[in-house]
Image 1 (tube, one colour):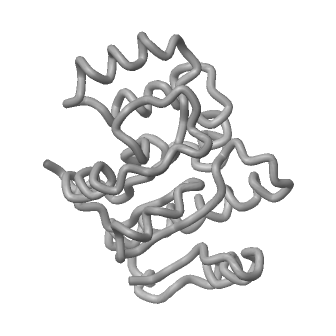
Image 2 (tube, one colour):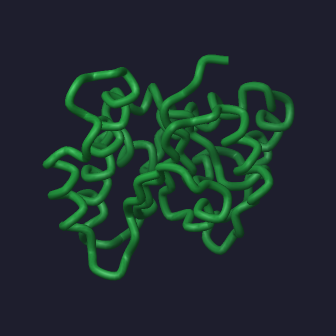
Length: 174
């Protein structure tokens, strides 16, 4: 399997009949991450709209996954399935993992990690923070593609790091 650059975990309850969604997931585990992406970006969904707005075409290069194996009625308060997250990371062997409101990812990944808010968060700075995550993710893709001059953290990334809210970890370099 071709190595994906970024795996992203985002808790999202698809905007569709929950029983139908569960049947689709159960019958198509082989294409699970494509189904997650479909329900994020090809169906009307505020989470997908926010991610598309921030990440643009990069959305197509990211493996999108839920932090749990089943599709819950509600995502708020549902604990992440650490075994599932480990399996996803092992399967895709990413260079970077992004987490949108799923802090448990730190328990299963000690490599390059980009943490940020859930896209549907009602915080006033959510859109700005998603845009900052996108800048870092785009830079990571350039590093992977071998673009010269990206061995060091870029000036843009340094500025982004300085703008994160105090007492919150959003960046870790492996």
